[in-house]
Length: 458
Image 1: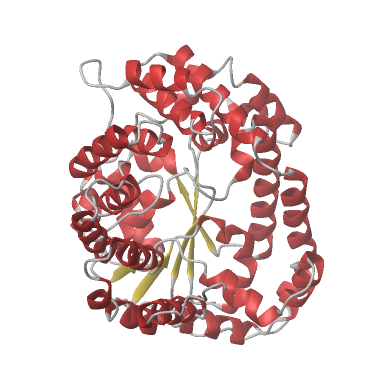
Image 2: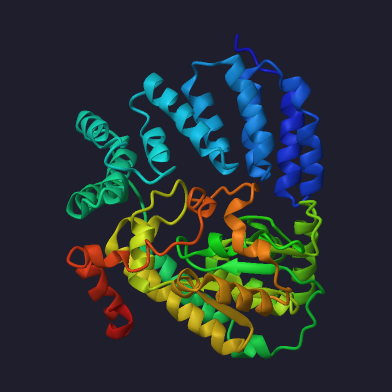
């Protein structure tokens, strides 16, 4: 006879907290999660589950504390140690995270993600790197899924050592393996962006609407173009808090629009009352419990919803961060994303997605002239002081010196740029694509075919 497992009080509390978060009741979710810590004590499994929930809630310090307790309960469990290292990275403890990832690799030499994460924590040097060990591990696991993160790690370390040809060779092979394992057609994303422009058109923009009062700051654009840098600069201001990458605007829009096919959802979304949408979004972000008057939503993909954002929140500030197209695409291509961005593993897919994104951004600018604050990554890297002052002014914020020393802040950062934003602004990545001009020539040609001007790709 099969035994049915009866959910414990801890299980039920965990589910209640997760449900509250999914429904936009962030403050309640955090309160419920905090109450679960005593029941999780001593159990690595429960502490792991709680740590994962706290990570989703954006409480990286709480997640680190919980995973550390799990590591005390199971000190030789590589999965526990890996999660602890991830929380350490988010909270800026990179040296400690590297030591923990060393332990993970000792316990589980085939854990490619541990190798990759360790590599991203610092700039490798000729005296201190893992290139020989990575090459041996990659050769041993070349036919296994773990070869993908190992290949990305090897590419990153070779780039740090200025082995340009070896770096791109490892990257290209790893990206191709990753792409081969995905069921993805970029045409779907391209058509979605075209459909967004057709539905959220000039007639839609001209409809009378009042929107909702509120002044959030949206920092958006493609990944790896500097949005995390801008977020850290702004959130160093005493009047600003960052909520990080959150799904709340998209969730509020979908909730009000209802279900259906992609086309039906787009049509219904265009009919959603702007005031109701803005109010629903503001209610959701209020649940995070942030105290500052201005809150940042740093979700890159919000560029898809930029029209509804501007119409439903007329007091919002939208900051669009962009980068030289070739540098942007190369930076995306060389990053191994855990989730999302399936277009990033093939140069042809990248060019088509970038072209669709550029067309959609031109559409939004035409519909809402003067409403989008444009920030160039290159300009910010070349002149951080003047550019920071201009950025703050555009957001209606008085200048504060702390915004120039954002890298000294202890606040968590849980993006692919977590290590970089702990450093002062530098120019090492500006024009980096030119090291690979020959290898990236097909990307450049594909971008030109997408309508990009050749002089903009020089």
